Every structure is written in C-alpha cells, then in structure tokens.
Amino acid sequence: LFLLVSSSMFLLVSCRFLLVNSGLFLLVSSCLFLLVSSCLFLLVSSCLFLLVSSCLFLLVSSCLFLLVSSCLFLLVSSCLFLLVSSCLFLLVSSCLFLLVGSCLFLLVSSCLFLLVSSCLLLLVGSCLFLLIGSCLFLL
Image 1 (cartoon, one colour):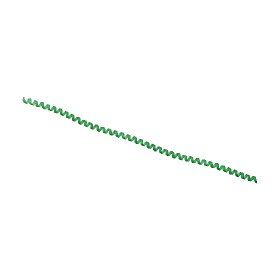
Image 2 (cartoon, rainbow, N blue to C red):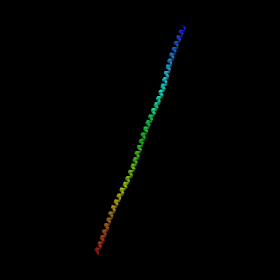
Image 3 (tube, rainbow, N blue to C red):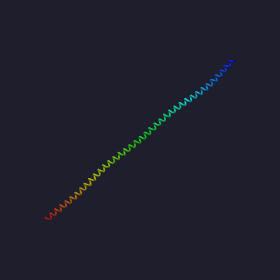
Image 4 (tube, helix red, strand yellow):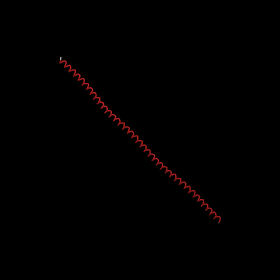
C-alpha cells in the first residue's frame, strides 16, 4: 500500500512536473517563435522597403534626368535654330539689299548719263548748227 501510494504520488508529481515543464516549453517556444518570426518579418519588410524605395528613386531620378535633358536639348536647339536662321536672314537680306541697291544705282546712273549726254549732244549740235548756219548766212 505504501508503494502504491508513493508510486501514485510520484506519478502525480511527475505529471505535474511534466505539465508545468510542458507549459513553460510552450511559453518559451511560442515566445521564441514570435521573436524569430517578428525579426524575420522586420528584416524582409525592411529589405523590401529598401528595394522598392531604391527602385522608385531610380525611376523618378531617371525620369527627371530625361525631362531636364530633353528640355535643355530643346532650349539649346531652339536657340541655335534662331541664331542660324537670323544670321542667314541677315546675310540674305544684306545680299539682296546690295544687289537691289547696285542695280538701282546702275539704272539711275545710266539714265542720268544718257540724259546728260543727250542734253550735251543737243547743246553741241544746236551750237554747231547755229555756227554753221550763221557762217553760211554770212557767206
């Protein structure tokens, strides 16, 4: 009877020990699981955040670079186009001005030369006519 009681008591103490130890094991294992899983979650989420933020930064910076470089290219090309076109316009207009001016100068000078030469010819001719006519009249 003593052995039966003592073995029953030992069995109860060992069951209680196993129950307490198993509860502690479950508590410790669940705490460790939560700790490890939260650390892994933080690690993965921070890596994903860094990856996404770096991709977004690269995307935005490349878009801004392309936008700024295209605007600068358009600005420089339009300035060069305006400069070249204005230089060509000035060159062509000055050449046309010189051509028209020289043609007008030649036309006016030739007209004046013809006018003066015809007036001189008429004057000399009339003087000669009068001289010859008066000489013939005197004879």
